[in-house]
Length: 370
Image 1 (tube, rainbow, N blue to C red):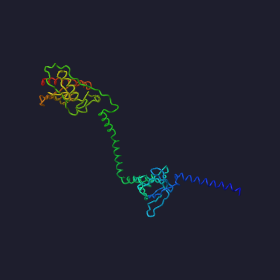
Image 2: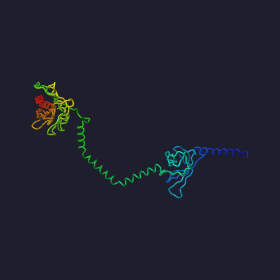
Image 3: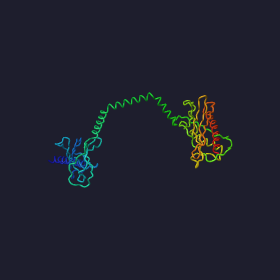
Image 4: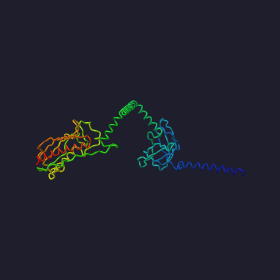
């Protein structure tokens, strides 16, 4: 008996230690679950995959208890009844939302409770109904989404095939017309001044005549010269050619110092200043009072190729009084041959043609408004 007594003591100690370990683990797993608990009934109207007795119960993300019972409803094949036990201070209300949450990489299901809007406890809480689809896992949700996508694709298979065929036809058309598209894009680059490889522009100007005869008659009153009117084709800085399409390649990067109407207006003002500085005309925006207006309509300012290249400038001029009455009208034209069709000789011919017209126009205007 004395020999066997130590073995009995040792065995009892080992059993007690094992029981203490299991008790400690149970206490840790239930966060003190051996204390007071309040039970609630839950109802899921659908499957609850993976939910087990002992699963955690979270309220607003905080663990407050565990699942203590699971059962199937005899009167409804789709319904699952559950019983949870939570700490007494958990604020479960009649409008508390119930659902399932899947945590971790393995997707362990837990019961998730979310607080409702009811603040005060109004008595016993009835059976809490889970939201529709609460037991749907991420895997099941992905399957349902893929199934819906597959249904949409099946219904619209014919339109999708037509769309793909149309895209193929469109891409084939683009492939056949690649050269034309490159030409269009290059033209747009040139028109907008874009393109990294564009050569720098060569700017040419025309000069107001300096050797005007001293004024025999001074200009009386305030003369105003508005910006000349012209067809839209003349509102450009390019050197224009007629007939169109006869422009030499070396004129591609040549331009005037301003658009043709603005250039014409500036040089006419300078011509009148050179004739009579004390009574020089003004632009409309600079004149408070206007006695006369010199209205110019540009009819031609381009290189004519027929019969040999020449710089051709023609315009109509009207002098209008303060009351809007037309005092006089006259046509002016000058044509200068271009010895060699290059930018420099062309600019010189335009300069000579403008000098003739400006000299004649100044004399004609001064005689009428003196």
